[in-house]
Image (tube, rainbow, N blue to C red; front, side, top):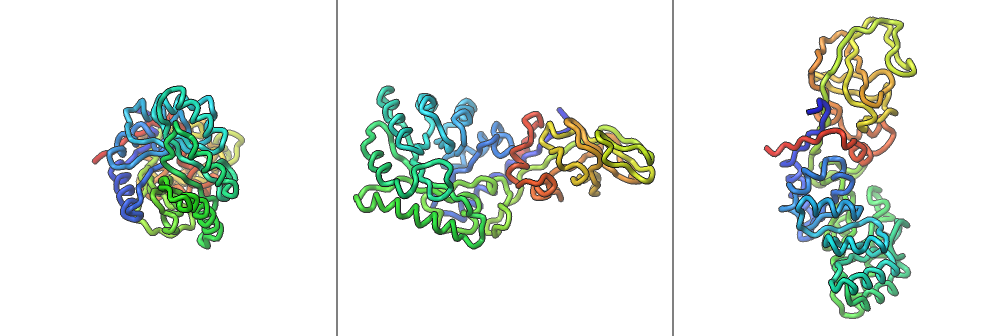
Length: 363
């Protein structure tokens, strides 16, 4: 196996899920496993976690199809935008469609009628994200239309927070109020309300009023707290990114390291090469900022990060070829990499390339 790999702790993933479930009970839990399970590897995560979840969420119909091909039988909500020509795939693979417009809902009803089946649908309401969904102030006509659709099952209705990480929750509360007003449509008509959901990771942690009938944990499912949000649920990271030293040498003063000659030492120093680079998601913009752990010690990355390799200055320490290198985990957090990359913890994990093998620990 390649000496650079991700180690995924599956028992900790289940512990995270159980902690979330206990926190939001009696609400259902729908983990989001889009973007290759936030970089953790959906092929290992989905089959392991399926017995313990109510349903699963993805962003793309292709992601839902892949889950079915893996043998996943639990309900799968495709939360991203879909085109009318993709609707037959929802029927073929028994996927839940997010109906985000009147036009898409009509197309879904017509496609289901032609196929002589019922298509399960969740209605999407835009309460302040301005991404997809029927605007809250136009939702009544959308919901009226849904009642006339005889070939779709309106199982759920949901919205998405734009600012649930803000501790003041000002905008989040406004979105909740707007969503609750939309939901009064059913109460006024003495109709059963579909499954209501809106809480993402930050809202799960700090906005219990939004938990409703189901929650959608994303980054927190994998043990990472959204920045600046209270740690009200006991979770822990699931992922460790590891490599091994591939080359070790003494570099003399006046001999710059890597492309562009951006770094050189003023004294003789040991430089070790790690077989990982920006082609793996170890971003080039971390050059001369990142740190790694080798033999329990932190060392600086030096010189331009290459596509497949980068270098580390270990000073006078006797670091050998084959020594384990920690890139993420065990003292280096997703927040650290996010700071060095100039991004957030979500992009750190989802950017780890598919060419990095995932190793699943189940003990």
